[in-house]
Image 1 (tube, rainbow, N blue to C red):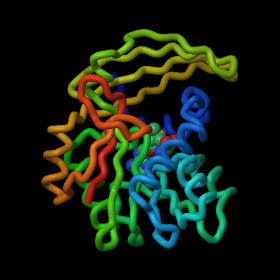
Image 2 (tube, helix red, strand yellow; image 1 turned 180 degrees about the vertical axis):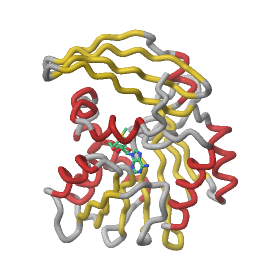
Image 3 (cartoon, protein in one colour; image 1 turned 90 degrees about the vertical axis):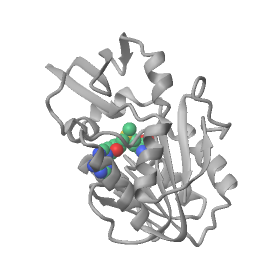
Image 4 (cartoon, rainbow, N blue to C red; image 1 turned 60 degrees about the horizontal axis):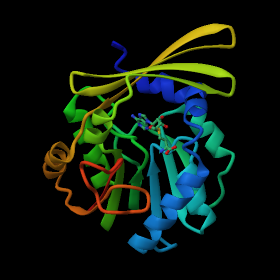
Length: 242
Ligand SMILES: C[S@@+](CC[C@H](N)C(=O)[O-])C[C@H]1O[C@@H](n2cnc3c(N)ncnc32)[C@H](O)[C@@H]1O
């Protein structure tokens, strides 16, 4: 298993992360955002934080609809790329979500499993506290996490994916309460090994976190069409918090 507790810095900052996950594209982001803003009735004058925004696929789409958006991420490369799309109502900042945010927002979005990366529960709770403290009065937060129980149940232990001419050999397993994904490939004349390590946070465990922070769950969805969450069949666990 990876001993590198900071795996999320190197992996998400590498161009290979974006190649392996290229199917998680703008189209997926656009559909989810359209459904979410229409459900939440978000207003264009409000400020949205896309927290752990990556290259900003959700933030850029929301801005294209007229929203005032800030995207924040730890990955220098992703933020540099995203910054090329900046305008007076779209900004990107490099920021570690374990640190408090410099501003307040009406809505904070944390999308596509951008949570549960850290060893200590206290670090997850710190992230939630930072989100809560960054909200304006009556603000809401949306956490789009994997349905951990579903992912564990249907875990594919070994898989080979060929994308853009790169053969990714992927091994997945559960260890010490985390889902580990080991990604091995050869590219540009070098052998590469990266890890993803996401904590198995089911709804009861997340509810415990939320209680500590003082967040209440307003809605629970199970996919990007915003169907109800079912722990046995839903792929996602999407929480709207206030
Ligand atoms: C699975 S990606 C999702 C990216 C984006 N939300 C999307 O849907 O394309 C997780 C993101 O979390 C970011 N991240 C990881 N640790 C972080 C931290 N401590 N603070 C801020 N961002 C972080 C990574 O750099 C990466 O961009």
